[in-house]
Length: 618
Image 1 (cartoon, rainbow, N blue to C red):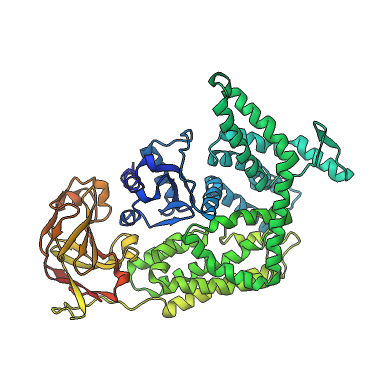
Image 2 (cartoon, rainbow, N blue to C red):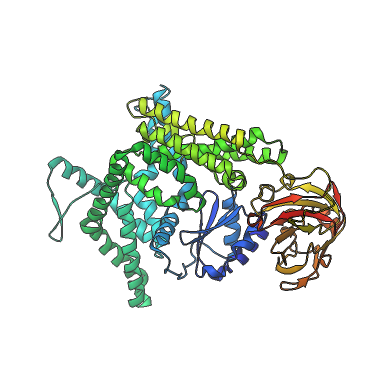
């Protein structure tokens, strides 16, 4: 219930539940696959304080929520009536090949992202325990924890069979059964026997079978799942309803399993090896350059949600070589943003910004950088750039050191434990540690020295707006509050634009200039205006007041109305909002502030409606 209002708002801005083809979530964002992307209102959704950012990339409509994304995902599913058994609707498959690939990969891997990361962390901790002498590989404790950490990777074909089946629109239990066949003890025994004899000893209907160990593999089961789902659709189409529930699964497993062992598996395995050796060849040419490039660009990929395209490459490297060089060079990229955020934490004197930085640092250490990037480093620009530069430097050092990981996970502080070689600590591990420290310290120092812009808020009222600037008048009576003091990270960070806030003294909102009403939230708690001078203003009454469902608010205008300065826009019950426990701080945001030379607060501690509030430089 806590996120019901936000869920309703998200659904209304993605075109309603009828426009949703699929919905999954990763560590911080909801990932919608929509039938018609044009029906989605990204700008309107960005104005919601519960949404950090909206990104349209990889064929997906991605809504960045933060660490509580699972709760919001569940609320959206409940509100839309979506369940695990809900049929996947036909979507628009006319997007780019790259976009469809990213959508498929993220749709297959994101459902088990939490256990994927947890398994990698446990593997790293076990390696650390062995090196430190706390455990031995022959002890029962080690074996049990190793089984817990390795089970997901060993039975990858089962897990991927289920998620790939759902993604391709088939019965996931059919494709999971196919994955089970690939890891069945009989098949593994046949593989081991073939390895020992060096000859093909089994046939299927007279055709020789080359057995391969598919444990931990990725590509074979995904291709097999696609084939099975295609066969399933044909069976459901042509078979009579009285028999298709039994015979369609029968045809799927009876055809796809032997086809996988005979054709799909060997071809997919060959592709996997080609892909792994191709990456290794490129990496070997100039490891430091590969590390610098990945270290610099990784966070850019994260911003657009494209980083999932590299996940299968890392897993494939581990399946083919037993080690991976890509994940280690990504860790400096993560720590570069953590260091930049630490620099902000140490440098800023603003209590709200310091609190946001502190929580973002904690999340970033564990590999979740979106709160830091969207809330701090990207809006401030220079810290983000410093983080990427430091990530490139650290990545180059890690690449030059030829550091590896020996189990999969996501780049976080525990990745250092996953970099411990089976034979014990060596120079590759120390090189990885040095690269990570360089990225963290360098970005922190650069941000501390030159990462934060000087404040533009005037300490005294300015009675005359400079001739080169346009005036935005105060839309209400009240006390002026610097934007970074607003108790909401989205507004305080400046992510939605520059501006200021007012704590209202009464319940009236008037037009700050002559223009047009371009947006009015259904709950009437926020309104957007476009001035005749080209300035876009968002007035958001209170924090999280969307949860009040419009009860304390009355609108006196509608979208499309022309207004002049001082016209009454909204009225609200100030006491009712306070009684409901909501903060009255009202951000007044210049939504298109990037199009202007600067936004300056020209009012002092208190202001009357109609007085100069902001000066927007041309």
